[in-house]
Length: 427
Image 1 (cartoon, helix red, strand yellow):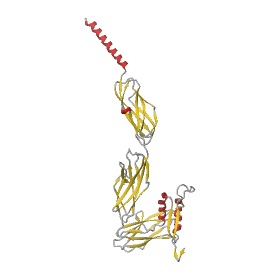
Image 2 (spheres, one colour; image 1 turned 180 degrees about the vertical axis):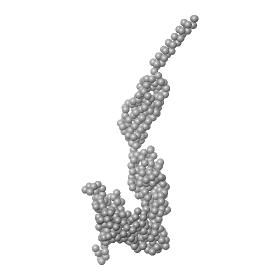
Image 3 (tube, helix red, strand yellow; image 1 turned 90 degrees about the vertical axis):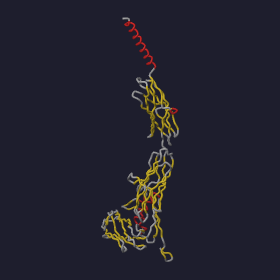
Image 4 (cartoon, helix red, strand yellow; image 1 turned 180 degrees about the horizontal axis):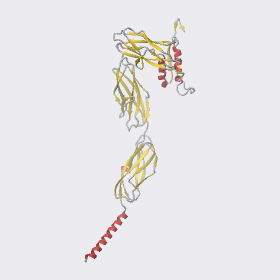
């Protein structure tokens, strides 16, 4: 296409928003057919048209990250900026699309004098690669640039020569004396939900977009009394800072623990990474749902009572929900010394709203043979994982009939004793 004798700039828009079910659930643009996504096929078509100077992929935000990965994998020849006197690495990928496996000889041309360019596979220098059909091989181009290299842009060409196919990828390398430090911080899941007893763990990816290795400090700003700590992604060692090589990423885990008294609601946490004169932040959220918490006590706070051996005694028990969500299906139980009986009226409570209470009656019956003294009876309430208990002191007194019988026995014994002394004392 020409306009006034000059080539026009053409833009292409690729829609990656399909949500039909014919090919399964999820984004249809990212469904693989014969090893390739429909998105990559559409983008590659436009890449082959010289007039197209810009390609824009549109779609829901949840899919754009994957779409970006697909596009960059098709056209990785982006300009690379490095610093003289340092080593830089460029990530590459050799992809086999629907062809039989073949050996590709790898080479790099256009390397300036004094530079060293090495192709790596799995961290080791390689001279050839053979990707399987509909598969790929990851490569790295390592560049060692001398300190006295002149500032400017150099173009290197990475070539892969097979039996029937030869591929050339030009890469522009721009030298800069001092690149500013740059960081990006990306959370995997920025919003989490749980109770005040939960620990909220965020997976964070820190990328060093600078041209040199950085030591990155870690910090987080959370609401008052919330505990925060950084650890390794797959470990428990707490971290204050992590080293990250130039152009590389590091995954860490931020653990946020709210206090047990945290009310239900939405809370914000700000994660921050800093190094030298640059920083990056990520806004995180946690939704704390209500949690019931039970408390038991006697009426007016009394936790003691008196009971007679063999007699049922009624003790008022107050069950209070001091949590932030309703407590439902509350079961009541008790434990007492052997032979005792403990029941409740009612046996369960259907529901107690937050900051409300309900009184029940505990029916305690000591055994008939209980000796006078103090005993401990434990009362419990449980509702869907939440429980509470308290100890009551029960003072047992013996029956008055036993007291009268005891006095009678003692009196009879005294009469027998007096009679014996009177009879035998005369002798």
